[in-house]
Length: 222
Image (cartoon, rainbow, N blue to C red):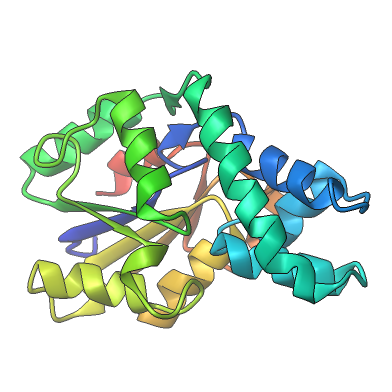
């Protein structure tokens, strides 16, 4: 089996269950501007993307006004803070043990996300996850100039831990854009999970190496 030294794991839907609150909020923020998009549409179009970019491309797809994106994003961010305040956030089944086990086997864990660092940190605080216990680093859309599917976040993760060869990196996520990010970085393994935003049929389009129900099932191949 490939010698994996670094696991780059998406957050919402892959390691954390936040009940799709982000995409529900994004849907509401867009619809507040007089549009009518469904949650299904938002999930298939926006999953995994940096959120301002997601709103712009969604507006483009539905023939909306792209110049409204910044205002909608602003409103989305405010609504999301509010939604998170009241949200019960849980780790996805088996993930907490998986992270601790992987780290005890000397593998590095980087959590990466299309969220801002403020939102990502809020999620981790709610879970009570600590750096150097559950994960080794957090990399968000704020840390890079190009968001997914650009491999920039993965390259940054590799640099942090002096990993030169992308074959030693595993990327896992619940959206096509996660898998594309992993492939663009040349990752040794890409794993799609069914615990989040997109269906098996959608995920298969990106040709991941494996499709698992949850990331903890990856233990068998590591």
